[in-house]
Length: 373
View 1 (tube, rainbow, N blue to C red):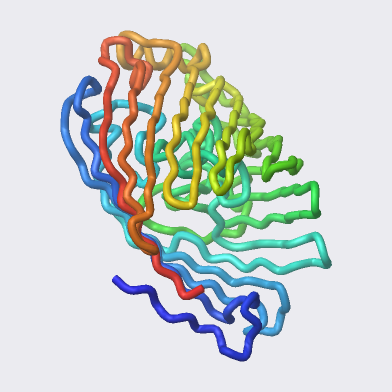
View 2 (view 1 turned 135 degrees about the vertical axis):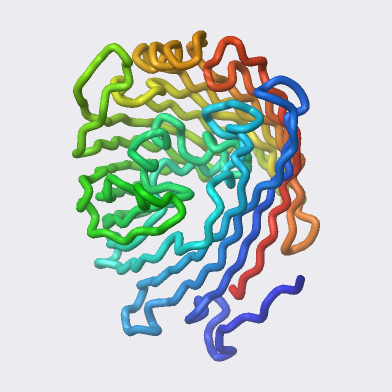
């Protein structure tokens, strides 16, 4: 594979964006359960994206951006078939599909405000764990206290929803508020993208405040709330209740030497446990980054609420309070378009099922990327 040529005119300044930028990525994981879990086995998972970003100059709005992402995913359900974990060891696992993933327009309102609307991945704006993005486990993208919510999830991979949001940014502070449709994707066909007016099936309201810290660090505080009500998960209870919660995250540089840095982060999240299995999540880790490689160690601890534990006990006949995953990963760019990443995960109490053995998962990720920027 060879990098595509830039579409920008030579007359443009070097720091000016090209009017149209094209991109393509493919991330594939080859993973094996080598001990424990539901059973031993190996699977190949992958996600490919083709993106188009159009600068607002093309349609006469300076500073605006129009973005489209078409995504393709190949299964299988590795966690469900082999590991048995709830947090999902691979963040590219999903049902097989080729469909539009994002399609949005962002327009600046003055110097500090931006309005954005369309089909939006919530996790590109809210609950973003920058240091954790290299890891494979899904809990290091968006916390499982948040990702467990909604009917099809809260407008995240693999099923985003239509949304409208307002973003504020200055040198030290950032704030975001958004309204997302409460149902992401289609209820009858999980492989289909659905465009609705945000709030048509109820609304997910999200707000986040971010304080920037010295050394490229930040503190995030977020709250979320569904306007719709959900069934109680306690098998002995009837009725409906709200689903809401919040999270806090701190991340930044712990140490620095030449072109290398030790980065760390910690996150806590809570969710209403009457309608969601996970009531409390604690996660975080550290990564040593250089311009040639990255090595990191992280921990994800998802704890059932009391109703969730009762539901798991009724379904499985035995339950543990928490599922904990420890991940060790090493990523190294081989070329400008390929990164190879061996990975090892140890899952304690997979799926909170007490009779299930702890799982050891080993594998490797290959990340391919091309762009015209």
